[in-house]
Length: 279
Length: 255
Image (tube, rainbow over all chains, first blue to last red; front, top):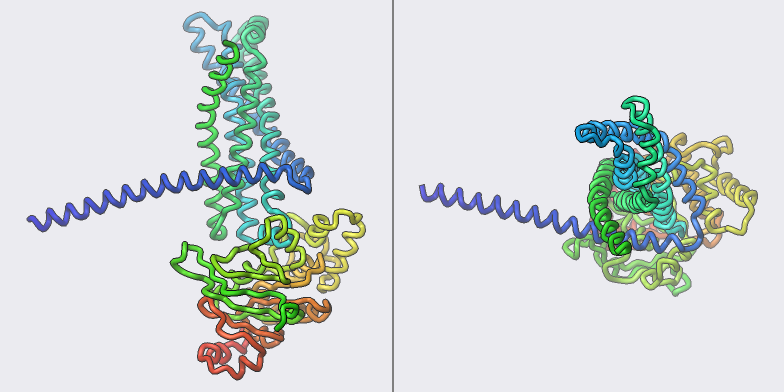
């Protein structure tokens, strides 16, 4: 009986030790990876200004991130605008405040949904492709080939992608905002029967340019975030095709989670800053 | 050998990837003669490719010193190392061609990067000459790497490695994964290239003993991260080291 009890206690202690060790390892790995990706980001940013300039590469990646995402961004924007205006209409109709549907939708789109959804969609589409492309280059020794040719692989592969995402994401966010408002307009005016003049008049009354800029700044930060995470995951890929798959998956998932977390902190930071500036 | 006669020198090079628990290279002392074709042989997992990456400065030793063409690689900055590597050419195991570029673009690429004052026509002319010298039919110049056979990829990889007229050419397992006929073709290509470029130093990393004895002026055998024997083919034939005798007994057939 005592021996069984001692055996049980030993196993329990071992299980608790294993659990604690695994939690510690995960936390350690998280901070280790975060530190490495931060250094990777700083080095890549420095290399943006190094010679030779990579403008051709930047334009090529802008075309890939931006031009090839416009359709999916427009489609998502239109339906998000329509769904949001419908839900807000249903809520405001209960308190006879349907004249505020326009500005509420516009605020939600420009400050939050526009940048966040643009970041998430482009991270999934272009970020995944970045991680897979660079990861494949790593495991097939193409990155080594670049290095032995005397070409800085980070400057050639990573920095242009970060710059391209930084420039392109606010533009895509602008497209998303515009199409979402068109969607909200069509649903609100032609389906729900809201007054067009009131709808736009209230938007012009309540929405300031700073609300739109807030969203665009967020989008630029999200662009840099997903480009850094996905290129980092691709650049540090090991282990063949399986490694490329894992890098792509981790790149997309980490980018999405980071965008959502960053959005919360940026919202608070920008509110705090605007309160400070406006007294 | 005098300093001028040595192209690559490694002094007590050790490399560990796990903080010193296990050493992939365990005190390598090696001198690769200038202007000769050296073959580094050894069983799989003896550290041949890691050794090659040290020669290219892609890996830094945990301890010890690597000098290539008289330069200490560890003392160079990233920028200096980048410039220095233009003096080296590498044919990778699977050629490592850029898969989004055509054959011609692959060979033009290092020239576009490092001969910025050249016109597009000059670059194409030189790239075509390199491809022609490596024996690739011009009808393949517009193809993507995915459309080429293993042998063709090696030819393109070699043409790209030679694009900047390197002083040292390194070959990483050039015949791995190729059938005997293609392997022989690649051996011939290495020999032709070495003979054509006067004064160039060639280093071939391989586990193919047949190729080693066909190609080498100078041979190095690695085992467990150390140099077991370095010398001429004669030295290998006369060696009393058991592992070398076993390796020689097994390795003369191409399957």
